[in-house]
Image 1: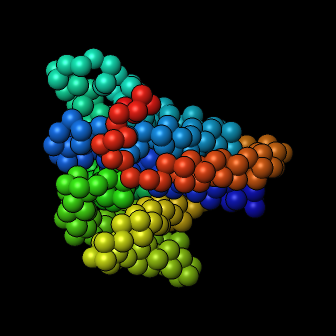
Image 2 (image 1 turned 90 degrees about the vertical axis):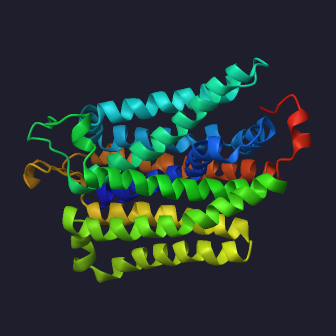
Image 3 (image 1 turned 135 degrees about the vertical axis):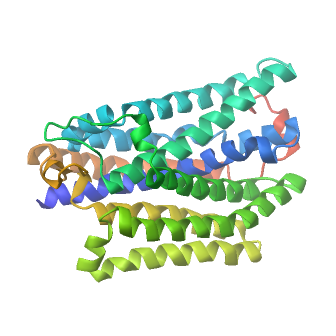
Length: 342
């Protein structure tokens, strides 16, 4: 019982770290055609995430691996029920990675235009669909007692699911705009800061609507009402969201980015806490839901995995801190002359 609970929240933590790290990559890629006014701007935008984006996606692999090893039944049902959405996400991520590498291989504006479009699609699609997927999990998936999904891709594109997609999109857009403001100089920096200021009230509006809508479309608040101390998670998330604006006014962009990161982590745990112990709730009948208790691996497997995680996760975190520190400087036009630059 304790092991299942530990792994449930570790599972949520891994997703939160992935959204926090790769979120600004998605945001920059989505803003790419709107902020990048010249080829130089676009190259700076790509190079601002160039040394980091693939390392950030390690957390996606880790979250998927933990789902497979710790909760194999959830993994099986999730990847069959959400197959279309998850495959679209996978192909989008592949398309984005290929685009970064191929864009500069041919000195032709038409060639670059093709890959620029692919960068946008490969960033916008995952940002939206991750939100759609998690919002649908929050409100329940139509699965029966055998774990069979009764619906289509369009079933997932319901109003609450799409609202979740819009929420994730705005979280990532803000995260990306702030990262670009940190990493860029000159007019590109000013445009990034300006778009962050314009995005903030829209993000707040979407967050408020999502919190209210969740009361009527999900059972997320049941755990909060049973244990009011959990409302501190929502409070901290709201304070972090307000902190973004305060730091933007002060032009403290790194602090604003950190507040944005905390907002994303808090938003993720808002859903994780509300779900517990459910991992894949059924909208057909609550008895068909997959929980941390009825869908987990054996206690021995969970113990061995916990030992592995305790040893290796700090190593991965340490490596990422080192990488972020190594590439902490701003990207200038002079940096684009290096052979290693995108």
